[in-house]
Length: 486
Ligand SMILES: [Zn+2]
Image 1 (cartoon, rainbow, N blue to C red):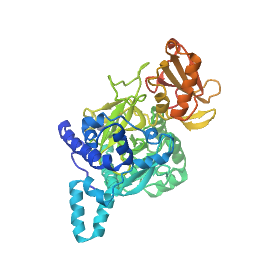
Image 2 (cartoon, rainbow, N blue to C red):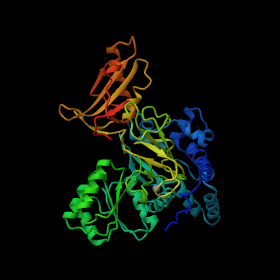
Image 3 (tube, helix red, strand yellow):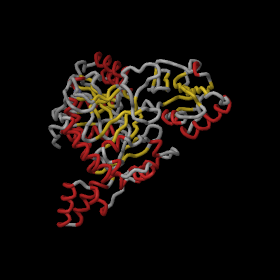
Image 4 (cartoon, helix red, strand yellow):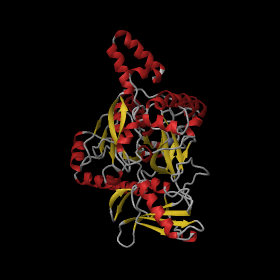
């Protein structure tokens, strides 16, 4: 069993800052800057050196980037350029001191064992699928998987689980970061774990053989599966913890609570865990704060989490809003991985929205780790059932085509089901600047949306500023939802 560092979650801001300075430098200056083709190119085009970007301030000033920036033409092959490409020759340049010393010692004994140490740190050996509008593989090295397991052992602490707990994960068996992280978490924490897939028969059969104390569920299907298991007579009475994997919505939580109350596991504590898209670590809610108000607990020495304006990717300014009012909005979660080396992410736009980032001590568990509160998974790339077909629409690209235009004074995007036939629509309302021709604006906006987002909106409506729509479901300052997406 990997021993978690006892103090990782109790560090003072000063202790943490010192670690972060060193970790950011090692990640950006020694590894990602020189060896990731994408980030090397991006830093060059921004006119910054890895040394400039490799400080806390330098990193925070780096414009956030997401899948559409890495794959601008929509071809997922572009994501390959995120992967660090360091050979044996480059290893000495970026390996951390203890790893390098171990490798050099090994080289004295045999060339083969030197290569084994180098490859553990540089060679991608494991892939999971990521992507919201696209689908691309995310690579991990063996040393990355050590980090995933170590973070997993910490997750068990946050969730209030021990090695005595037994996990049955009723999740689809697709290679996702969340599934992999859960497997490594159980391994890192020393808990037996079984992954029978999400079919009710298979889950019921597993529960009949394994005395599960923890049941992991896929939020959209969790309540129905609980009812199915109950009907099948699956033994649920030992289940003390239900993990909802993927930040659940309030409706999903409520449905699960009702299904649990009808089942044999009515005393179970429900906790959310979530790996943002592209990331490889699972964040979790603390057991003491079950219910979701304290947010997802992150790992401050393994990642930097920030919030940005989802329309521009610029750092979030102003006071955080817990309940966005008209014209305000939610923030996009952006993250930088520290110490993960395969597909390395700097200031990565996850597509998740959140109410706020809490840096203060958690009132429930008193951990001093940043917490992401009010997460809405993938809300910026909703799956829409448009009349032209089902697809995920990257609202960041749609906003990108509208922000800062000389011919548009203000705009709103409205997504969601139409009252007429229930099909989803993507309506773009634009108020032209004085003197701009309405017809020209409509044509130019349509053309630019097609280039930036790879789709045609359902309709572009040219209106006066006072006619721009307002509504309750704000996804960002100018993107509204008719309810279902997000
Ligand atoms: Zn807590």
